[in-house]
Length: 276
Image 1 (cartoon, rainbow, N blue to C red):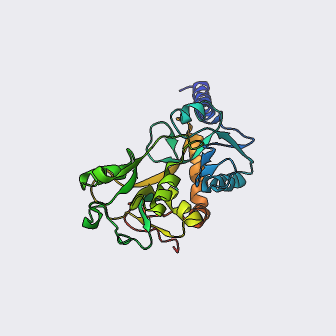
Image 2: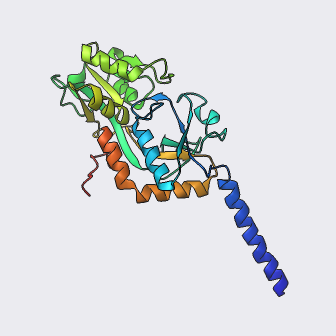
Image 3: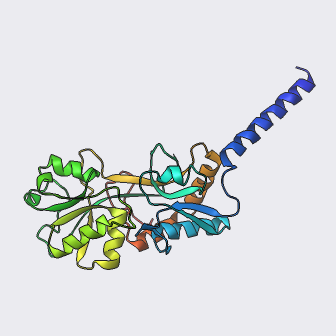
């Protein structure tokens, strides 16, 4: 092959590589770490920036040498369309692995649904939903969440108290309502996603306890790996976040542990050993 032709082919490959990189990263801000977040989603994120996802955003921004900039929008229908896809922000700090609306980073923690009870409850030591002692009790559960299926399988759903799944947290707070009902005795136990239950109970409900549900073997699974979500196709940005996660995992774990998030191993079978 003539030298000129080889040279042109080489240039073509370089141009294609440059174009591909530009197409996957040119929407990402170079002047700020732009975060898509719910303004009223404590304990994860809030406009006061006291949630553990706010702390994680600060950590990543610091490592990138950039200020944090938020695009606030309720975590409900249209969240991704009106934030990430509208190019108003570049990353969702907490997103379940495998969701088709975003490109997921590597997961940076795994957590699980929990059984929350009063510390003096006769079922305080229950660790699986097929325990016969739960029969006839009134359990709080978010409608449509994975634990609701387990309640139905075990004949517990008829007595359950359902709380709304998709709400605007600026106007409705189903999980705090559930915890208040538990404190008052209106319900006997509550099934709540661990990253919500753990921090809320740690911060404001000293008479309650949180037990990760690690012994359920029937579907649907109760543990989920949590990632950061970016726009589809933005592989360069995804790889950059993956690198940051890998190099800062111990700091990430410390923030989550301090907040009270129950961390478990990748298979959701036992608590994560943070001493390693």
